[in-house]
Length: 415
Image 1 (tube, helix red, strand yellow):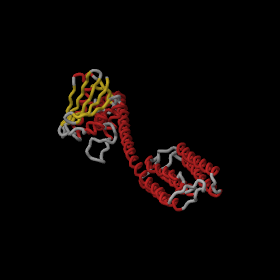
Image 2 (tube, rainbow, N blue to C red; image 1 turned 90 degrees about the vertical axis):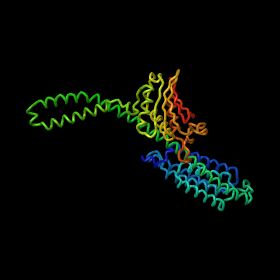
Image 3 (spheres, rainbow, N blue to C red; image 1 turned 120 degrees about the horizontal axis):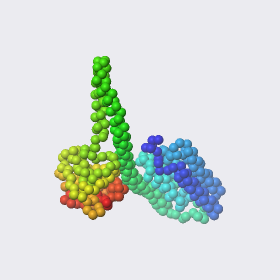
Image 4 (cartoon, helix red, strand yellow; image 1 turned 45 degrees about the horizontal axis):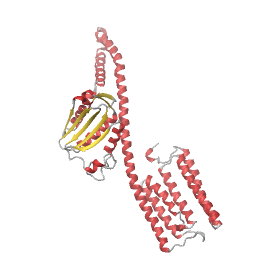
């Protein structure tokens, strides 16, 4: 299933239930009006016919939803919303037009479109609604005289203008805020994918460790057999080149297994879930980034207690630390200091840079997804540190930001 082309907001039961409720509401309104007010029989039957079209659309939706993936495509949702606007417009025009108090219900399909469809389809939906408003204003059947409001032409024009303005403003408002929501959702998906990749690496690492353990004995056996072949003069004369090739390939296998079994913590941050001292972890952080960002002096400092505290290194922690340190690198002038400290029942990791520091507005709104520490407007939404904060909190930690001769981010855990 191509999720990029699917409209994941609705499922079969929700979509059908919503349309059944809409049909029930229209039926109750038509029945109530027909019973208590002096509606013409022709108008009543026309209204019932239009309402039944909505019931037919429920059957069509049920067929489409149970035909394949239980999910409607965005194109299908778009067509259903176009149908809704036309169906409601016809029903309203048969029952008083712009004088019908339910005319503003046409805004409902517009709101749904503005929240979930692409911009091109939103414009089509809005244009269709505006055309329907204009037609309703000019072509409609009056309400019965006993319930017909006495509205001046000026007020009537005001109603239609309000519908036009409300529709346009509603589209702009909902579309703008849905973009922010979609951006946040996309950032979460990227972070989740990155975390999933880290976990897949953990599985691969486990397989590699198992391979190192399991292949050791067979390779030793092969090594003994090749040694016997090498000492046999007759085999040496006949298969000497092949035996030499086997020895070379065997040495390669040994080298590969040795590399796989080497502890990588001295080279980079491990992707596996492991335990190491707080002091060793901040040291590995500084060494990793120092080798990749040589223009910045990246150093670490630990107190004595940090050497005695073992912490669990998880993919989430590695991602969070990478985000924080890379953010510091983008602002630092010359140096970054990574500090580990332990006092009482808590330990901390601090990342301090000598850049301009955080502005007061950012510190006050830290942790909110649309406040960035970067000066560019409209480019960075502050999602990096927002997601980092969520990850640290999921690890039962706390993250604080302040200025200390530059920016300083403190991660705090209870022992």
